[in-house]
Image 1 (spheres, rainbow, N blue to C red):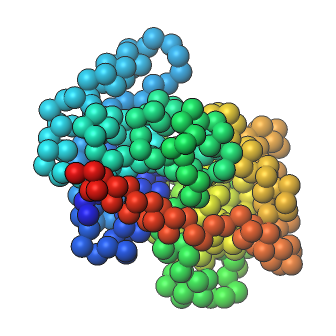
Image 2 (spheres, one colour):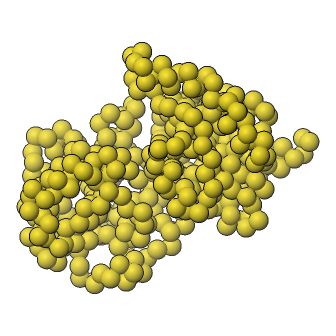
Image 3 (spheres, helix red, strand yellow):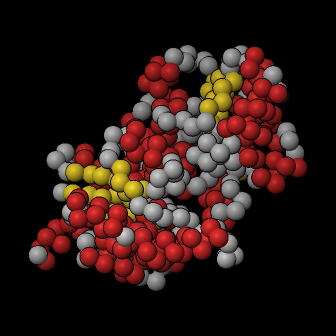
Length: 379
């Protein structure tokens, strides 16, 4: 079995692709799995690090509706990249049995090219509202995998859709708190706060976390607070870190990115993050007490809806960017309240676990076999 995976730009598109790759190889160790992405984006870091070969195509996202030079370039690439020599050579050389996309502009060229050749294709949509690439490609795909049942109703090609959930790497299901803390050298009594705003960073979270470290985390030696500022926000955040005098606080750490996220999540007592669909799935699988701060510009406000659903069930605390801007102490006060109440954390852990779906990977593998077998039968 030869599987070509594509999706990138941000970790939110890359991580489900890595989870699918891992699922394929767990079930078929003889399978050959490779990736397609865009140079200079997060996949160029994460995919080779995970041990997979990465091919490159040219693609660019369209931001807004204005006819800017960048958007015009993106439109030209969208029209030409699927038939370019580089894209066609990938398919010629690899000869995939199935091409799988996980959304984002990075997957457009190879998915379109594969569909034109009649190669079986499947695309996964983790959010409740289909993204731009999924909406455009849906008519050409053999299968559209969704995380939410309601997503199917938002697609034109409903008969091609199959609700499977969000694929997660096996570490999210297998790492225990005890194993993670032992690996990280943390005592059972140490309180670990883990905060991040996504691979690109989130200004509002970065600013609020620095204030929280200054006013709360650094004051308690029993706390270890680790924050991932994102590649785009690291320089500004580390500057604010030093300006706040936090370099003297050995229990406060700022990184650009956390590569062993399942390990750190397993060890954490409280997580502060955005509320994208993949993040929510990971937190639910890990049963983590969390404070969710939705990205306010997400399409259809889906991050707020994700966080609202959990908050309404007592599975998470919800803060907005607006709240953080109006009340600089909001994050600190919310975190302090949760960490000072172990029973509340246990209750949040139990409630968020109800949102986990441990069977998503198996559903995807079952359908991969169906798609590949069907194509072979047609030959």
